[in-house]
Length: 269
Image (cartoon, rainbow, N blue to C red):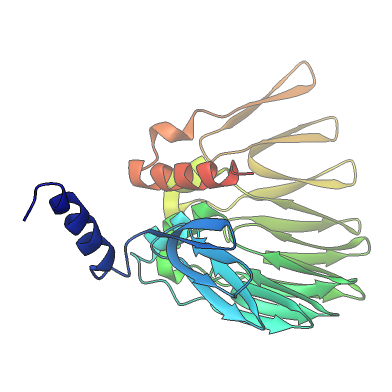
């Protein structure tokens, strides 16, 4: 066999060799090129998931892909529930708790999320990464509370004459003061530092409005609270000053790393 034929035969063998379905690949159709995982085409376009845990599916003649957030994958050790894909009225979406409302389809990004219709759209609510970092696969599902035509989703929801609100985390608190609901959530760093033993926040009335947090102090009817359990609030010359030491010094590195992954994802356009 002549030497020039050897590279050609090696190239042909590489092209015909079976590919690992879990490995990234590239596909093209009509000049469109997509690269990633689990690539699929609907005959008009080709799309790929961007992570090994992503999924692509053709529904109602459309190809859609979904990638669970990195903090969900790590919280479930790669065994997170399979996402679903739904189609209706020409719209297709993938994720969790998929909901169709007045011709619109939308899905939550996490297994603990939920979606509800509002007006002529669908709104979805998901627990933040800090909650998954502490609870993992035991992350509590989000609740929704309605008041008339108004509703809110989250945790520890409370309603007043001005509407209903919910905390973003199970560590949060909501307080109705004079018909106005105020919600407070500890910082993600504080959640990482204290975990499930995070002390409950307190709420105090300040000029007809609730103020919530830690180590609250008041002066002449005005209240201020620290944002973390280690924070302090002091009164000086009828003024309340609060200070919070950095919680990252106490937080577990693994929890902070999980928040770092979430921060990077939030920075994507």
